[in-house]
Length: 360
Image (cartoon, rainbow, N blue to C red; front, side, top):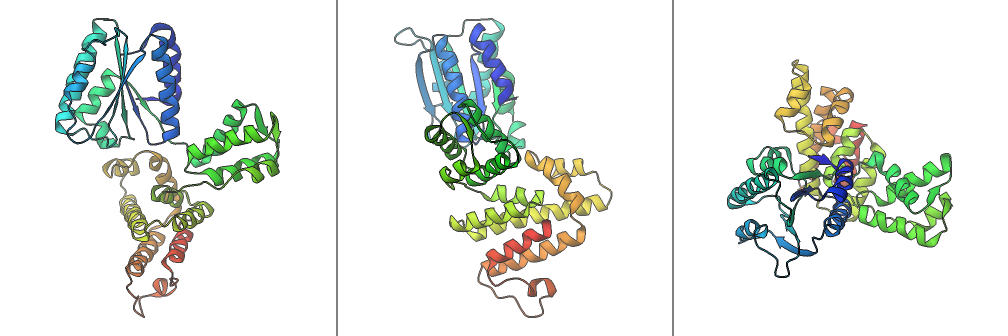
């Protein structure tokens, strides 16, 4: 699969030479998917694919519609652009067979150098490691120009904001005040790129081209950050206590179920304990991560965490999450539960913050 920046290079070539008959876009960040989709659509329209058809995979979807899309002539004789959206990322058995057959059809078309009268784009959410190894996705990856749209990592978010400001001929002031302004804005919009995009556009409307002061940004930018439990576990792995506490506050404020958060965090702590035990036995960490299907950002974060977290500290973390689980279900901790559990705050949300300190 291509990354988004490599796909930009493909679009530049395709703008001159013509589109490929099949594209696949995978990703969970709506803003980045929409922007790439718009650029793809503009390119194919420039090559005469002006008739657009949208298909949505849902229960009872007729997969013959996909097979027929590239074979049926437009009523008006126009070239076609067909979008197929698979929101679940799971086409099912019939869909898997249809996709493999469709990919064979595309491969034959490319090999024969037939003219491209229909361009098809299939939209998928972020695909996990297991899906990437499936026969239907492997067929797509081989037949299509497949693009992986990665989320913007928190550490890169200030640079992303700065680049977007530059596109509208604005920039933060030089030095520490400018960096503080970018960090402030990143904190305000984290996990919500569509809102971040809107806040950046708002700065373009409120202020002229040129330098933006820290005061300008603090006055204009709203707190539109959104967090999820997976970002929370990533902040734990990174040992970023300030970000972890900010996320706990955000999730609590948004009414996220504590039981769900604790289940996710507990699974992460159990995984780290298994990895630590394996490392202490002399096992290779990369092999352990592969066996446990660890991929994405965690491939980078877990080795760093393992250097920081001892077996003793992870055992304490396991004890804490066990106590928090009982608290969240309304159960009281017995006296004499041990020195760690006796220090647990009565509010499990505060206990979650205590857990964060073990990872810092």
